[in-house]
Image (cartoon, rainbow, N blue to C red; front, side, top):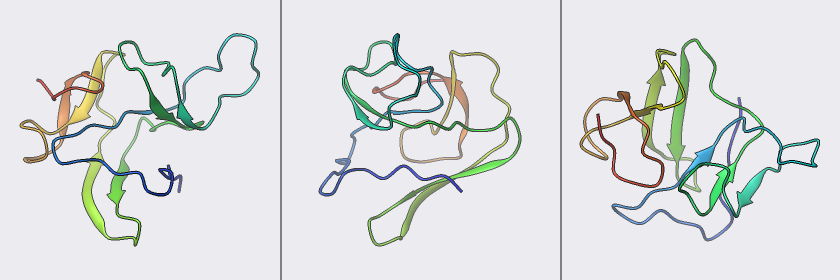
Length: 112
């Protein structure tokens, strides 16, 4: 089990977005990928994000968003069916409906 912990006091406002950059190559001159809040973000068009040293596998994975006290807010059972760098896993409209492959739109509203 891998976890991304947002810094104490961090929150995602209603209608807001957070980008978690997973398994990104280390920046030039570094041997390890920095983990945690990163500015600038290695994702094109995103000014800052949270970066991890792990990614999502090519088989079934569960991704959950939890509150600081461990209550589950959202859950996606990722099926590993993304094809290419421009795809993401999202809900359209944002925040409702089933998760499904969609067009990548980091830091912006989801689109299919």
